Image 1 (cartoon, rainbow over the protein chains, first blue to last red):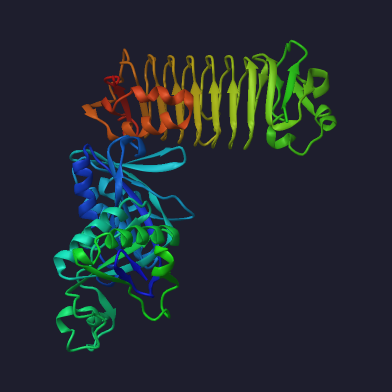
Image 2 (cartoon, each protein chain N blue to C red):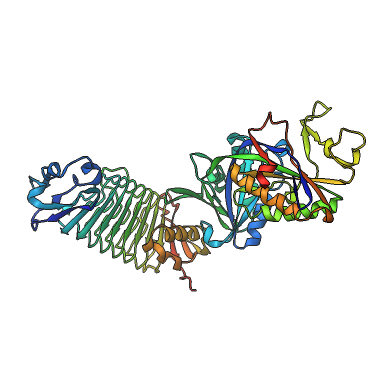
Length: 298
Length: 276
């Protein structure tokens, strides 16, 4: 199958069940909300090494936030609720509470909840105040900039991690330009994040390694510099491969994000150095969710 | 289905306890059964049909027509549905209420929302003393829910209140928020003397500067209180009548006290009203 001269492989992306939460960070200005959000989502590209995957979902207008200030919606994905419970309060405590003028609220409410301000309140050293408004409990923690307001808990929902596609181009410059456009399109979809830096993976991995102490290592079949040494999946003309990994709240939003991303990549075509789009999987035996590229782009 | 309507046929001389007439208690009853319910009228017990003419068939929505201040305990212990009172109402409206809505078109007596644990009460006129308070013997006053008074309130608003929100659009009497354990009281006009007397925790928000602040409250100065942004935004989105809170900003003079008690309560005197 080809779109605008770009070959779409007859393969699928294999994705896994995860747990996710959404957090709303507000601040006096959008700039400061971004600073806190960028700090919270830092070092959260992959569960393999970071414990969670996190990124900014979207900007929020003052009318969309609980306190009427500009805000950012951030999503955090982990393999279990327990891991989320470990990651979220730590990140909020160190990255949001310490940022000037910020406040932090739950972006999802569900049956399952994890602590947000529940443990952070102790930072108030006895001067913290609890407030319940319309069934939601908030903590007011006195801090040097005034008070840090934080919702007691945030909801946890079932989610999916690992929707992906590979972009094969003539050079890294070509592949990167196409991927950047894809990321811009994916950002328009609510309920998904691309957790890697800039949303793009430059060093995709396969499971396992020749070294026993490594759980993941370079995906040699897609490494152009060792095409001649390994059983490569790349043709001669491909000089660079980049991957986009998508985590989302459900299959539908991931499919939508992949469709938008792939279409954006294909709009470049071979004349602009984009030759092929593929996807990463493990033979279909590990992940519960299979996103077949041909079904998605049709 | 039309609201189950109770039209008062007499002008009561004594207090009339209508606590059996709540959505919870009438849900499974036919109109014949409802007519036979005995209500406490002064020292006597009189059946409903001798006091009210009944119409309508939806017990989730109950209406009292021609109500007077002699009707007491309206919506006592209710946990669901709506009660609409056309006229005035007596004491103990929404006592121990657990959910649902009560709307009173006129004035109400004392002990409105006494020890309620959830739900919403709206009084279109004035209320007497002990709004949202706890009776002697109750461990505390209201512990959740929302009471909105369009007019004025008497003394001891929110006495021993533990959680929830009380909004008074008019004036509040003396000892507003006395012995508060927690919760929020908002007074949009003047409050009387000794606001926050003996309060341990909780927040009293006064839109107008009171004549008098007890010596056992310490000033923390003029501040932008982040919580007020959250509170006013959330309130303004809760109900149409609460959209007035869009006009209020986070600037407030904060007093903390009562230092004679736990000292962790606060009185916030709003400094400005947002414009534009």
